[in-house]
Image (cartoon, rainbow, N blue to C red; front, side, top):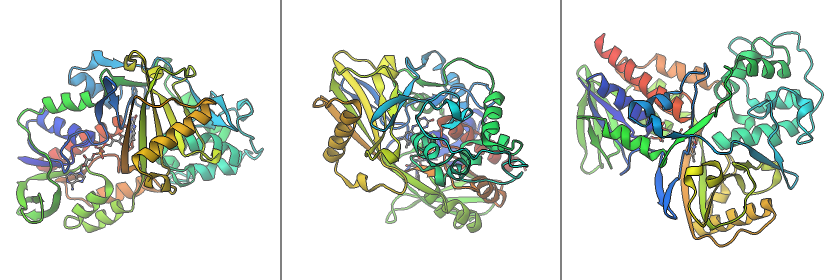
Length: 454
Ligand SMILES: Cc1cc2nc3c(=O)[nH]c(=O)nc-3n(C[C@H](O)[C@H](O)[C@H](O)COP(=O)(O)OP(=O)(O)OC[C@H]3O[C@@H](n4cnc5c(N)ncnc54)[C@H](O)[C@@H]3O)c2cc1C
């Protein structure tokens, strides 16, 4: 029973780990020379630094340990999960850094009167006389917030919060996918204020930290999972080019077009971004491929600066609404947020540039991006930043899925027509965060194991 997993990001690795646990023969094929995908830890200025994902949610929506925490525990890293020293970020509004208002869900306020002047609230959130959303209805987060609270709440609060996760705009992102808890309460409440309060009340009570990371970087989670893939055949630097039916299983063509190789498999798991998955689905089930292929992505660049010791506010970082006119959309004060990243004489900050639909800034070369990141952050902090000791630009082209309204239905429809020995896993389908990707990989593994039994 041989199962090919295509893609060695955290979703593919979680799938492979589950399959190996269940005794399956696994071939994991990754086109790049490195495992981990968007989890990538390197050395900078004498210590580790994450160039992609830096943390993961500690709990799932029901309040249980998240799939990422469970996976970290399973590979022996439970004692090396660490928590932020500072959880408070600021919002750059009107040239000032303002505390992020409390009592919001991704910036959508439960008490619009408590926004403390950060955004003017339109007085339009009247009783709709029926639930805000029908049973299967989905809507763009921006459309809902603009209709009920006005543009400033959408532009100054919700957009930067969602942009911090998806590099996307609230006007294009699905409520049901990006904020499922709020979508659920919108199906029973008649006002958005009521829906936010109900969603906040539905959340399991827990005063602990929301996010954690691994001492030494999330790359250590990747390395540990890989160490435990006993007997799995891991092939790096080999793109999967085609998957075609062969007998009762599949023939997977890998490698260069001049020297292709084939691997026969009883089942396959596609754990790549949407575009390659859609291509590979072409000869499996083209209807599913077409549905998967509509997913669009945002590109971002992260500029990490190791500065000579520099006084920063006691914040984990800041978010910058697009309407403020800066190129950077967020900054993380790495060694303030994560005590373990402190290194003597160095201040470590990471800025992020690039928004969905406005990615021209990413055409600059690395020096141009470093200069822009320094200039913008200096202007926001009111003091020029010193020349960095080291700087690193990491570009993530087409990296963050833009879940448009109706995403969940499209994914369900694509999956419903797939043969039982083919599964889709990853950020293209089930959520962008590491825990969602881990869970997605595990579920895909369970699906094909079940499919093989029947
Ligand atoms: C800049 C950035 C910061 C982020 N920060 C966080 C964070 O702090 N916390 C959090 O929870 N999430 C974060 N995320 C999101 C999270 O990191 C990703 O959603 C997640 O890692 C995606 O995992 P994946 O395995 O689904 O996909 P990927 O990591 O994209 O892996 C897919 C793999 O498939 C391979 N592949 C593609 N095509 C082929 C092919 N034809 N053949 C073989 N292999 C192929 C790719 O090379 C890649 O390695 C961040 C994302 C980005 C871009």
